[in-house]
Every structure is written in C-alpha cells, then in structure tokens.
Length: 211
Ligand SMILES: C[S@@+](CC[C@H](N)C(=O)[O-])C[C@H]1O[C@@H](n2cnc3c(N)ncnc32)[C@H](O)[C@@H]1O
Figure 1 (cartoon, rainbow, N blue to C red):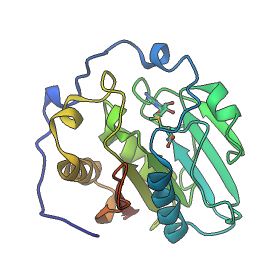
Figure 2: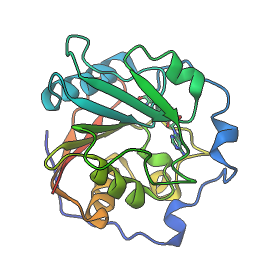
Figure 3: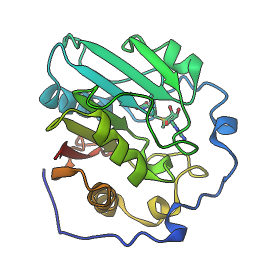
Figure 4: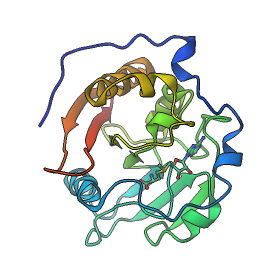
C-alpha cells in the first residue's frame, strides 16, 4: 500500500542526537549473528528487491551485516556490502566483497561515480547522524534512474537510533526519510510504502530513483 500526506519533517540540530554518542565502532565491534526483523518481514524485503533488482547488475548493500535478504534465484552481477563489522559481512554468502566503513565518521562512500545499479539500506537508516550527506553520496555512486531502496521496521537499537526516529511513529518515519531524500537533492519519484505482513514485525519502504 502506497501513502503520502506530503508532510515535511523539520530537521534541527537535535534531530540526530543519540543516547549513545560514543564512536560507532565500539558498539558494533562484537558481531551479532541475529535477524533484526522476523521471517515474514524479511520475506517482504526480499519481495521488494525482486520487484526492483535485475540480473547481472551491481548492487550496494549499505549498512550491511551477515544477511542481505536478496532473492536467492536472482543472479546479480556483483553485490558489495558496507557496514561496521568485518566478521558479520565475511559470513554473508550474498556479498562478493565488503568494506568496513563508518558512515557517521565519513559519509562519503568509497566507490566511483555511477558504479551501482541499486543501493539498499535495510533496517538501518535510523542510525545515521548525517543521512542527507550519505544519501546524496549514494546518488553519486548510483547510475542515473537507478533505485535506492530503504526499508525499516519498528525494531532498533534504541541507544544508537537518532532522536527524530525515537520521537516519530512508523508512518511519520517515512516522511522523515522522504525529507532526507528531498534535502539530498538528487532523487525523484519518491514512493512511500507499507509492505507489512499480516502479523509480526511491520515493514515499510521508501524507494526513490536518481534524478
Ligand atoms: C540493525 S543492523 C541491520 C543489518 C542488515 N542491514 C540487515 O538487514 O540485517 C544495523 C547495521 O547498520 C550498520 N551500521 C550501523 N552504524 C553504522 C555506521 N555508522 N556506518 C556504517 N554502517 C553502520 C551495522 O554494521 C549493522 O550491520
């Protein structure tokens, strides 16, 4: 189900404060081999990827871990992960290569212009302290018209989520992400979707195309 009430969320200095302001590498040093959302919600993520991704293309899984939720039957050309924990990504069978990179220290991505056909961010956008800069750079590494697919649920590490995320409800979080994308200035066709399964963890998505 698509929705959009055209809300714009005001971004202020306190929007991106977090309870735990310590460097992220401390929190993510220990690998977590857990699923951050339940199997039905994961199926909804995979379904969405099936709709937007094509065979033989290059995909960047931003804020990656040991699971990327990509459709098993889809023969992608190249899948690159970027996250905080080397051991998690080393165990991810869907990644061809990966890089440990703290986006809250350095929002610029270590990739060349137009390198990817799709960028994914699954259940992680809430941890970025400068999401506008990261999303703008994701626009740089994407080919023109390529999709950026952001999914989220209502589960998160509370101490590491930004203040705005904690204050807003599920629907409002989609408007927050839409605001990030509008501020980034390089996206069009921003679509907000409720893809929640009938029960269990909800699953929302914001998909945009590079202008
Ligand atoms: C809740 S997990 C989600 C992992 C994976 N995307 C999934 O769907 O299971 C959050 C992920 O965000 C990554 N992350 C958190 N803070 C980050 C940062 N500052 N820079 C890069 N990645 C970060 C972590 O490495 C972790 O894998």
